[in-house]
Image (spheres, rainbow, N blue to C red):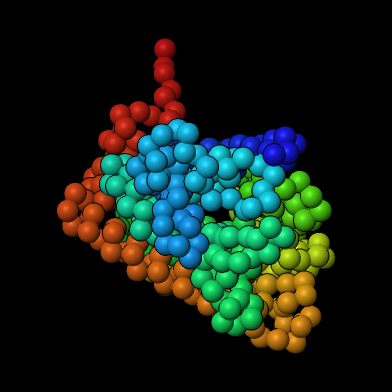
Length: 424
């Protein structure tokens, strides 16, 4: 084992874990003042619940023996042994320069942030207990299997892919090109965006839903959250190389370039459309660019990453208004940023991925692989999230009463206030 590389993996995992509290601030600033605790608690609830489920069985499902169909997880619920000595059954590359547990830790943080992302679509109106039930079930039947489709792999002693998930290895065998998703454009962002759309439809619109009716109560929180997300995203993308090498360095630079360009593009659209560039727009543009570069950060040159950022920032700035035209209440634009941005970033690789994209190879194989992976994840996540959310709504109830929504979900659900002003 290489101690430097192990340290790099563990540091990257810590950076990605920080993204979820960052998301809590980002989402918390976007909702109304009476919902800030509820919004932030859904992110922290995801840390607690998914952290436990990942150890019990999530890792075993997502990284079961590729091709063997057998569970090979952490000793415990779905691990092979109940003896701590049995950790050697964890699946890692044959030539890995890090201990198996470092990979377990890194991937755990991906599961947590993916689930937390979904919560932004149902801000201001969801019961915390129902959210936790949804989070556990959705992670089990959607995220863990989809992570296996995209991230699971088996390498030979020379580092060549010999088996893995169908989105990568399977499509490679069929089309001659496997889907490229370096850090989670499909498994994380399209997955979460599709689930968010499904839940927004199940829970329905907030009271008084219309354009301009719900404005962010704390833009400084939004900027703080975006900054923490961007900081953690360097671990998210560069860390996905699983080694401190040249590819990780390229991913790092692209994780700077694309969101920077997207931030500028979003502000330009705002200036043209509304006459004023906003702080919330800057934060949202940066996040949209981060979403788009996630699958492609190691497969693009920095110049093409800037082009991707400009494209995504402009398109997502327009896409967030679709909810008003189509009539669904995606409270914090999970669809407009994560689903749309994830689809753009994933399909962009079909054209501009170094060596295999259409403009470099003259072949549509890479584009076909990207489209199939994106479409499959979108449909699978949307359908199951809708069913899970609908069942919860019909049984224990997912949405709070309109009266409680107007009174303030923080005091009704959590018995707390985000801002308590005392008068003398």
